[in-house]
Length: 516
Ligand SMILES: [Zn+2]
Image 1: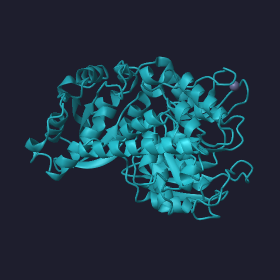
Image 2 (image 1 turned 45 degrees about the vertical axis):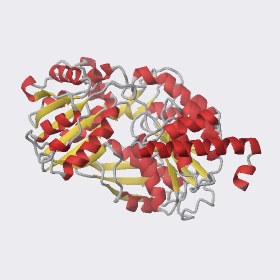
Image 3 (image 1 turned 45 degrees about the horizontal axis):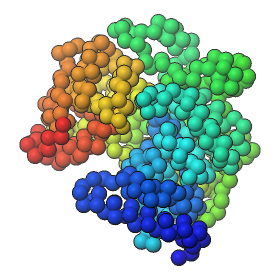
Image 4 (image 1 turned 90 degrees about the vertical axis):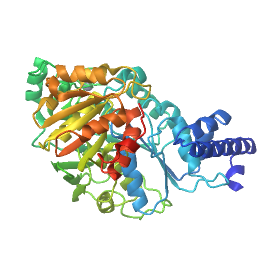
């Protein structure tokens, strides 16, 4: 077994022991109906802590995606683009994005002798786990989406999360970075790095003028008395010199065009820039490749990945029109990030554009179902910035709608639900929203929060159980239905919606398991 013997006999034997134990664990998980996305990795790491490094070193390219929001969609898009280009890809698609999940995904990619079947690995990495995953997996390309305040009990303050990324990347000086130019917290990571490519969205008609935003922020509250969370902006100060950043415009959160009067740090010109974004049932936008020559847009392309060669480096000055079967302005960023990473591996932008058309969203990322004969969309919510973007997207249609808001406070959701008060739910007071079913372990907290956001109490229903909340939703008015759920609710709602959709929603509720 040259694959094993090349890495030392002791390591090889320990790996095989861990590998087979993980395989048996995965089999047991399947037999007992558990997804088994992380547990086999836990077992493997217990028996051989170096298992991720052992396997990752066998891939020709390892790509990692990290950040607060959008990393699942970005990593899934990237894996999709690469597969469409004919590459076999190992990928932790289920969002199991800590070290055990990564270990489990790499083990799943192996054949019976423990040899990786793919040549490329796309790893979604939890922003709190980069310090464990990156030194082991040694990604050659690191994609960073954005940094927002998220689950303070798990991720601490943003300074610690971004500091962790920077110090971890110091140990990977050769890694090429693909960074969000519009987020100063992300763009700052590229300072002093040799290989960086930036992506961003140019000024849009809807972009908030910096002056207007400042005026709104000064008030601090909106008409109904709740905090204008849409104006909560992280990274207001330059990470280098501490001076307050000056903005020309904002897209949302702290994403926009900024500069530092103190040290000259400013939004880098994106190598890949979107403009003319049109939102609706799907996204339409134009992508431009910066005409900069090749001095920076030159992430090394290595042969041997099997991707189409010669077409990868972005053709400077090119403009392409993209249509994506995704909703939400924020997904433009995810598409740009994945496109930039795919092109670094030799996939042409035109191939990316074409393969985008048949992309299927991951579980709960604006995933579409049918409930009570109407379209029902499932969306993950987990932090204020994400909630605000999802609400903006679903309210943009203006059609009559009802929704479930399912809030849990288990470890994976974040124990502290005070984040609800930082999100901007005031839009739900609009007349287009007919009924809101509050569900989950913290249904009552959600209802109180909505009342203070200005939603009339008669439009609120309190139904803590998942199946019951969907039955209640199916009875409500609206052309469109939505389920917005925190992480530990997400997969159960997806399963229930799949079953109810088949049964037409109202006709088969008695078949549903009582889950809550
Ligand atoms: Zn500065």
